[in-house]
Length: 340
Image 1 (cartoon, rainbow, N blue to C red):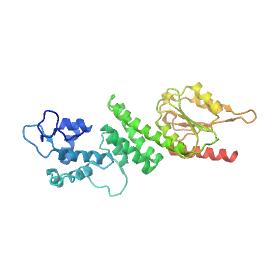
Image 2: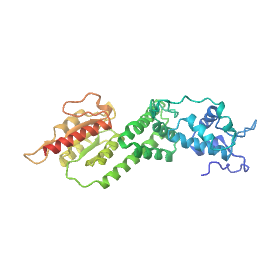
Image 3: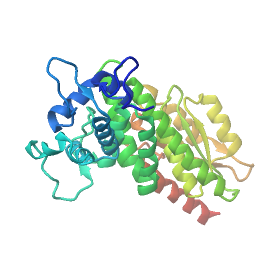
Image 4: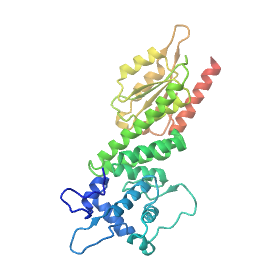
């Protein structure tokens, strides 16, 4: 769709209104007015007593602003670059009069302001860009940001420093604003899941078959938050570890039956909140023996997610990040191989 094309019934060359441009770009009219007020990124023509109209050159600048902020460029910086896109545009000449943000002399890839309206705190620029694209409901930019982050940093760093912080910020905003931003959370979750599964499929299709016992990954009964487990599943696949991903809200009996049938090297259980924590189930799995008579053994239980609390439980592993979980599971695999 050509966002610079006037609406039906509008004279040719008249441009588009702020409301129309906002709808077509997937941003709010308030955002466009804020960019105009703060950075001078507005229509060149400002007729008195009439609605302002955005010409194709005006629209081109806004599109460039959206593109740059989606990749994590700070808004002030993005606005200056966007205005330089159109030589001779009035906004370009007004740039010097606008306030500029202080440059980060540390060279750090992290920044404390998100510019997205989300409580991000100090995060990577890529995280800020991902949050902005999600709030705008710009699905193409969200997907591009996710794929670029994973390719550039690897899945583990991308998850811990970009994907998860953005997702958590959206979740906090949703919880504190009474159902607002639920569409942002759904959009971001879907694209993160799609990206992670792409990593898993790519790794799994190139992995040679193995006879080693798999790692089972499952959410406890009543728990539907699967994305952290999906990330761990994909990261294990990249390392050539066999996995069995059972997904969300796995019934206790089904999980126990799977453990006895498959004989996993470890069982990873995810609980997002104290309401879904299943201590007895974890203890039952940890005490369950499987295998042939005379050589029966037990699986290690790995408790993941904030629902379990911070303290480790006797005989059970308690990582607090994706990286820690991978280190623990790698250690289990090494000790298992040495004892074989």
